[in-house]
Image (cartoon, rainbow, N blue to C red):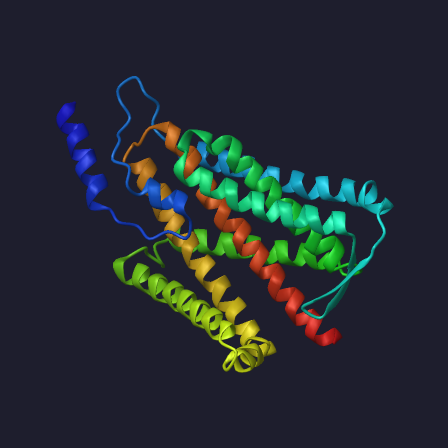
Length: 286
C-alpha cells in the first residue's frame, strides 16, 4: 500500500506545474497528498456539487442587490450621474458605495481563499455573493431597460463552459505544454500592455496618446475579446486540474479548492461577456 501511495505521489509531481488564472488553482497544483485508507478521495460529482454551491451564492448576491435596490436604494436621491461605456447611469452615493465595497470584499476573500484553504467554503461563498451583487448592479442599473441582456450573457457563458467541457472530455483540446505556453503568452501580453499603459498614463507627455488609444472603441473591444479567450482557455486548465485531483486520489478536502477555482473562472467569463455586451450596446447608443 505504501508503494502505491509513493507511486501516486510521484505521478502527482510529474503532472506539475499547472498554470492557473487564479491563485487557488496555483496552490492546488503544488499539493502531493494522497487519500489514506480511511480517508475519502476526491470525486467528480462532489466537485460539481461544490461548484454549484458557490454559483448559487452568486445568484443569492444578485437577489440581495435586487431587494436592496427596491427598498434601501429606492429611498436614496440619485445624485450621481455617470457615463459607463456609453450608458448614462444614475445612482446614489450609498448604492455606489455598496458596489465599490462588494468589489473590495471580493478581492479580499479571493486572496484569503488562496492562502487559507480551510476557509474556502466560507470566504468562497462571500466572494461569490459579492460577484453576484456586482453582476446585478451591471444588469439592473447600468443596463436598465436592457436587463434581458443579462440572460444573453448567461446563455453565452453556459455555451462556452459546455463547449469547452466537451472539447476537453473528447481530448480535442488537451492541456499540453504548448497549450499552457499559449495561455502564458496571452496573459503575459495583457499584463505587459496594462503596465505600459499605466506608466504611459502617469507621464504627462504620453498621457494624451495613451488615453486616445485606450479610449478607442475597437481597441477596447479587442482587449475584452482577448480576456474572454484567456478565461475560456483557463477553463481547460481548470478541467485538467480537477482531473488531476480526482485521478490521483487526492483527499476529498481539496474538492473545495477545485470547485472554487472553477466557479471563479465561470464568473469571470460571465462578467467579461457581459462587459462585451455593454460596450457594444453602449457604442451603438452613443
